[in-house]
Length: 173
Image (cartoon, rainbow, N blue to C red; front, side):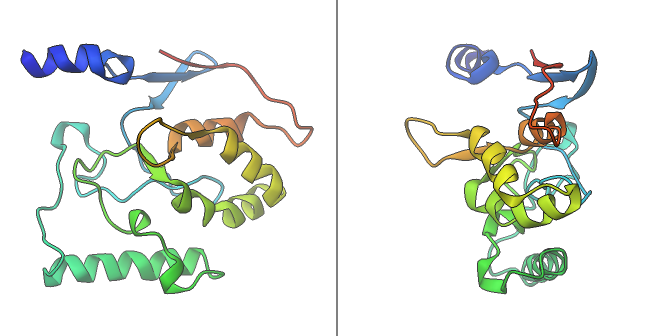
């Protein structure tokens, strides 16, 4: 009860799920990570629990664990296949390592920036357009590093038409 009380007061959306609807249809929760695989979308952090909110948790593997290192290496190799313009050292760690909860809805600005070229090419839009939408959807907290909510960013890009108009049929509750 104490944790619930703190969450109800101190967290965004008062500790409740931030349901996102588009055209009246639920498309996700802004505060729970989900998997995106299309090249036309920004991708979330990997999840150690398969993005299953009932199984929130990390892998419990330390940074020297051989199995963990193989997982991260395989994720990095796959990320580089989909982003051939990057070098191994340019892959942000949050794009190949799972968060502690396995459900992190946000990625770093660096994690989003390295995906701009892929998303722009897949959508037939300019990198400048995608960067502008990314910039508009970057959260800049008073304390901490700027972050990008992947679901909100992907919806903003979906809403953007080639004529530069935005569709306002998306709501978050």
